[in-house]
Length: 234
Image 1: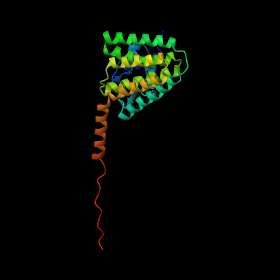
Image 2: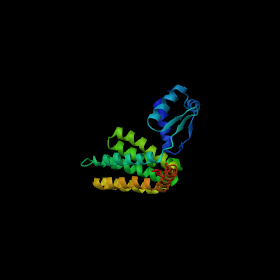
Image 3: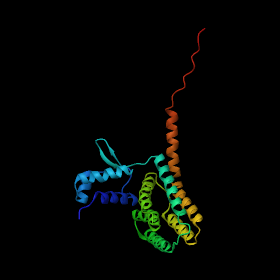
Image 4: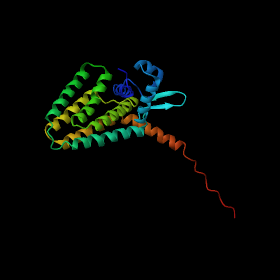
């Protein structure tokens, strides 16, 4: 069965989530066409789809590259995750969540196994997938797709700015969120989710702050020079 442009795009996003594709990495059309056994036209269509979703960019006379998120884009991605995931949890109030809890507990067990024995890329993929899994379990297919993109964007950010957030900390955060859901304390689960996203973002704080400082310094350096007022001759 022929590979579709949707499958090609999905493979690229999954490779970003697994930190196998790095910010600024080149994506050659012919190399991808050979890899998937499809035409360059189909590859180009997949890359254009990814461009619209904010994952790749085309550079004149150079080709396609994985994006390198700016500081502003990094902040926007984390802010979007807080809005989406906090709101999603608020909608669970009063809903029976027993089957959801079982699935999420199994996912956390998978996370722990990945932390204990898998490579870094697999760990990153499984931990990011918790948020997609949560949306899917709650019946939010559109939000699940949105969160897959948002978590991939924040993974690119973490890769670019060298996040120090520990995989074990993420897994423990996930377990606490599920425990709060199991206890029916939705407000606590939401607060923990927001704290969790904030913890991941704060692990980037030093790098992001350094970049902001550098940009502020550059703006100051290139600011227009104040010219002295000319004295009028009477």
